[in-house]
Image 1 (spheres, rainbow, N blue to C red):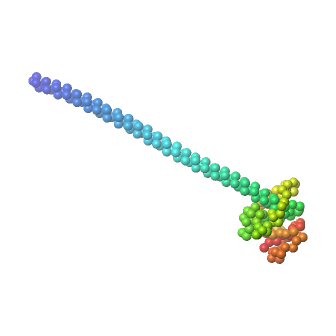
Image 2 (spheres, rainbow, N blue to C red):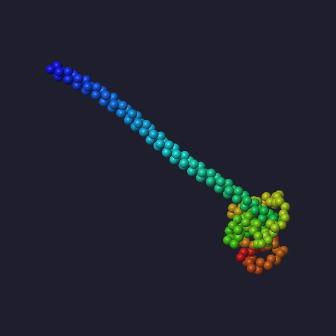
Image 3 (cartoon, rainbow, N blue to C red):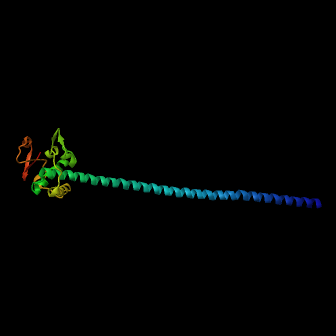
Length: 206
């Protein structure tokens, strides 16, 4: 019986030792595994946050770029308008500066009609400074002229803006593409259709 009891006691001690060792091993495996899972979860959360921030930043950059491009386009549009109005005002001033008000409007209207006509340049400045060979479409362009100024030029600028924006149009010259002073007799007038005379200028269409 004593041998049996001794064996039983020894077996129990061994069992306890094995159980303790197994428990410590299990704890050793579980704790790092739990910590690993927590780190993995943190990593996933950080990656998700990063992607959200990245998408937000990319969206903001896209919006910023679009706003920047629109701002540039607005500036170009303003600059283009200013250049066009100056060309139109200069043409009014030099071609009809001392004509009656409607005479100035008519010259501006001819200029704008040409812009809209496929046989002429599609900008005001292009129309005003157009040449056939060395011949200028508007004679003042090929001549040395003083810088426009004074009350007459201020009125020319006012008329230019109104005609350019379509705020004023004369019925008599609504389709006019050509004009000349009444003291000259150009060869081309016989090939055009007479419309009206306003002040010293006679206006024609095709």
